Length: 111
Length: 113
Image (cartoon, rainbow over all chains, first blue to last red):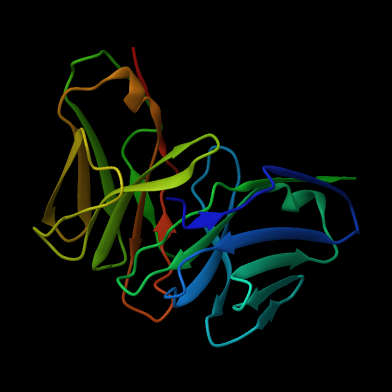
């Protein structure tokens, strides 16, 4: 029973263009939605989050959009840079402080 | 800066061995977590702890146990390692905020032969 799905295992984008990473979930009780970024041989690092009562949160080049009726969120990176190449995980937060991670999307940004 | 340190980056063990993975955090966080990461499956929660000597099962606890004798240290124990426990193991810690951001260690790549 997968509560969180990132249906695109990989995404390839040209430098300077927009990267859009998607995430679908089934549980309406998630309180916060977090995005993590992971480089090879490193642990995941927190990138950006959005509260369930908002529909958009922006931090520099990163914007997360939440569509609660569709149970869908997306992470936009504009403009994409080669250093953004990493695995991105969507991770909704439950009320007990637990994160449920999606399968991850490998983003490759080509120079 | 939060620092979560995992004792080993790479570990090779034999089937049937008892394996200890250690994790230490330096931010006085109440919560600590153990995950494993496998290709195509994301991160799956094995065990977590909200306080010293407390532990809760995550989504895949079978074959694992944990110990939290001190607030800063959370150990994952494989009682009798099996080949299907070959994986990347990640430790994380967090404190009580609305977002409960978890901070991760660099991971331990465990191979069970």
